[in-house]
Image: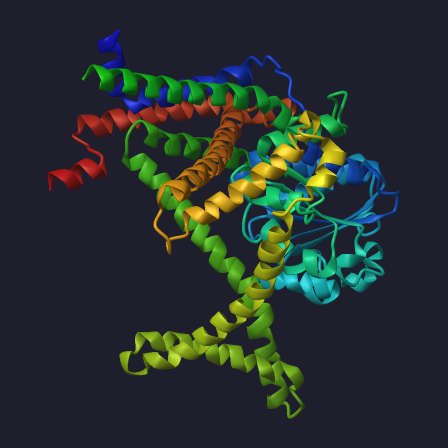
Length: 282
Length: 271
């Protein structure tokens, strides 16, 4: 046993990678559907969106790139389904240069499922460079920040933008954020100044940084990482069926997350145990 | 279902490059380097193009062009002429390359620093300082009314959590108080502060691990074709692409090894 513990500590790290690969691939191929609960932050986000009356207008700032797709694209999709289903009008924009090819097709696809008309029910304003300066400008004057939509139509001619002058004119703002510029910058630059109702879906890495914003009421809801997306999917599609035949990608990944974490916890515990036992014997 | 050749090719290239990057887990190798350099090159190219078309052209070059045309035709250039100033400041930045005139480049840098200081100061003070300081003083009476001592249904909110927040915050701050010797009473408080910090770092580490596993899940879903519809999979055949990429990569790495290939780090050690 002692020899095994010594050898375990000197084990080639590639065995650990192989173990992790198995822990990821197996539950994806053979899901066992472990249960998970919805936390208070995601429930608050869902409830606030669910309370919106039909015809309200919501600003979705989709600020993510291919690197964070697995974590927050499922939320973006579920949120669009939820908003369109509630007959809410959606204005999408992005502050990330790599986002438009990701976020626009998804918006068009989900709008198509619900038979929504571009310009009447939703619009994609496109990408704006400038990071925090752009956010500051969105807070003060949206037509000045985005004179046209992504198709080049002047915003004053777009019905869904009629009467929208600044960020505070929206019933809610949902920031799908995978970093900077994102939720922190929205909170810092305009949330407090204009008293905006802001929610965030973010990566797991940023999650702990934004929890204080939720606790302080600067965010009315927060969905962090893949579990946050899975919880929102669970609330939006309680029967597990997505209109248009889509998949619940985050929900399908929860088994993998659970098994992956158990694997890492086991390695940490066993590694420490081996270290202390062999050190004592030495 | 029909997919364009670009989409089909893109899917296969994406799968092949994913396998190339993952090959680093076995060992540093030329195929990984190829994928890494490709990624960097494409990222930088996209950023440069986006910066040009998203910022420089609409905000600076177009107005300058309009102003020049207006001046040439004898009409009033209006506010477009002001865009010459950022153009000049941009040009001045490059004087850093001329040692005798490099000091002039400090002028646009001073503008940048001042602008960001102004932008950040109010935001940081309001969002990160004032509001968070106010929230670190919970109303214990209200917590008792709303949640009692400990409310499992609200992630443990209650009087106990409120006290832990206040005491933990004070202990953390005292840990970084160096104007008095950390003798016995202060050492105990300081230890408690360290414990609180460790809890915080542990939570951050846990979330980071979760984020990394999520990224691995995203790649695995693509390699196994779980992120596409059945119709798309019937055209793309992601699992065949994955298998073909693995076979190709193993073959290339075997040839590389047989020809005496070594990871760059080993070569650096030897030399």
